[in-house]
Image (cartoon, rainbow, N blue to C red):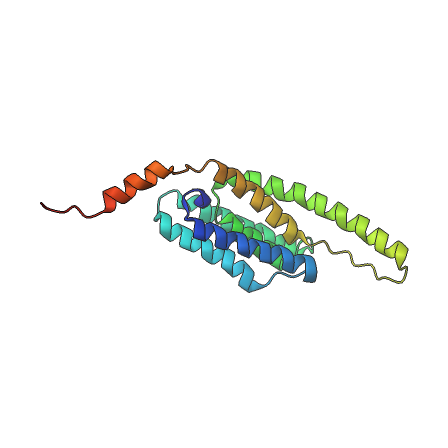
Length: 180
């Protein structure tokens, strides 16, 4: 079940704020705090509660567990940071098996673009200041956020929009009926 589609706007806004914070943290400090990853995870749990526990949620749990397990191996090999893995797994909890394929593809493409930007920026900085140390890290959390925003944006574009007339009808239906 793709949780973003039926989630209330305030929860989607909270998710986007947490993702933005993760990207800024990683770009500036090369670290993503547990609090930020926890906000993305907590928002997913709230979305699950809002949607109700349906049988299709096993896919979301499987995506979360698989990303966490494979990510732990990538972290142990030194390929990715722990915060990047936790963020990606938390984002994965929002998605089912079909949507996670798009997320992984978007994250890999964004990761390549972020790496190119950082390689070019390092060369420019090193040319200006040759004594600058070589820092080989790339803030992959930025790529995770970019991929997540792309996938969530595509899903939100398919979200049914209530018209003004639909909202009026819903308010009329919810209003108490007077007995005359």
